[in-house]
Image 1 (cartoon, rainbow over the protein chains, first blue to last red):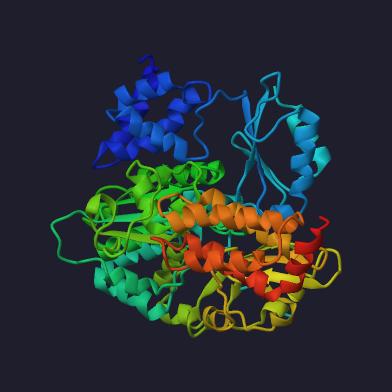
Image 2 (image 1 turned 60 degrees about the horizontal axis):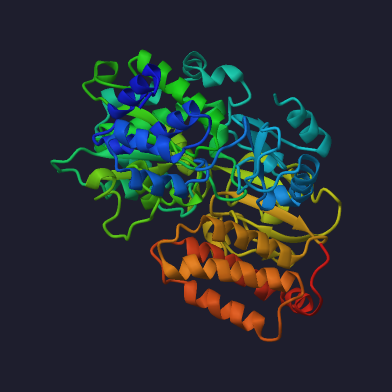
Length: 156
Length: 422
């Protein structure tokens, strides 16, 4: 399976929280996805199946359902721009258009240099500081085009 | 002028409030200590009933009443699922509690656990909230180290574990039965009710599902008394509520207010400062995007659960989205339809297919590619989605879209002919 000892220990810790191990699936997949380069390949899903004792077809179904699990390779960073109403009213369409044209990415697309994968995202819950985007685990609020370029320009 | 009454956000501007020490310096966990030492579980529930607290997730169900649905005598373990999947468009309030004052939510969770006899609580936080996840995990660790979470809390014999459970990006998981299905390690599919979660929830055991803000209120009710809480706000909407102002408003933000003491217009003008552009307001979604829009002429409604319901819409999750007259009603309706068609879980055919049809028809209208009779077809599809599905997501699309077509019909008809210029 080749998961790190640290990950296996964390998953074992998760199991203790629930009366049934299957409940640990979502938190475990977050850990596994992080360890395996940000996405869940068919091989990774088979490994996860073995580790978690859950059929791989079930895991595939779960991976396909949630927007934060990726079944295709992704860039080194994930850029999620909120497109829902509060952000739209504050200029999200212009930001989405700007990122697409300047960095040459479509929704779910990755920049040619592999720096980031771009995603239009539904409401990210920062409506009163709109428009906003989430870059990996960090939020950027009250966005302007200049601010977007500054943040994306600093990504390694 | 209307002003804020800060209870849940009283100390939110102090960064130390997120720590156990800071929280305790302002009376934190005294309500829990009082409850487990001096009150019976039924007395805690009774206080919550007396307070008049209604759920803050969107449906506004009486909180104490929900607690009484959990069976007292059962051989099964009981659970709490804290609904921290805050995903309703326009809603950013539970995040304020989790990131700035998370212990009040944990204390409320423990009080609820004591009242219903739950042995474990899971805080289901949406995956897109890494900051909330970190803050709540840190708070739980601190509370556990201080014997406030876990076994034999404060030597009382009462014990309850609390764990954070991260979601992974799915609006539907805020629906309480979908949340449970997801928590069990599945696609987030809603379940048919009954049985209600209070009777058969997680792993078919009795499970209480409460929203973050609701549980924060419980802490303040036990700390200061049901009578004090009931004296805030107005009958039917007691206590304070967190409102999220967003969109074309000069002063967007999260405000804590007593319901029933002001109209929507006063809120938008006094606290909101009117529109950012100074142009007239065209419409307001008063409680998230799942309920009908209020047009410019409907803003003098008194702002409480029952008055807003009488006006044909809902206070929902307290998310107020404002747009001015530069915006096309067709474009707003399309944005809403895009959201719900993306978020439909796909279980029920009317919603899975209908949400996509509605989205595509609105696209045609916007692009001037629709034809005569298409608005009638659109309407026909929405009526066939209403009331024909397991959960309310279909209605959450149908009701706002119908309200836009009804209240801004000339715009839709004009767009049919020529499209709209965005």
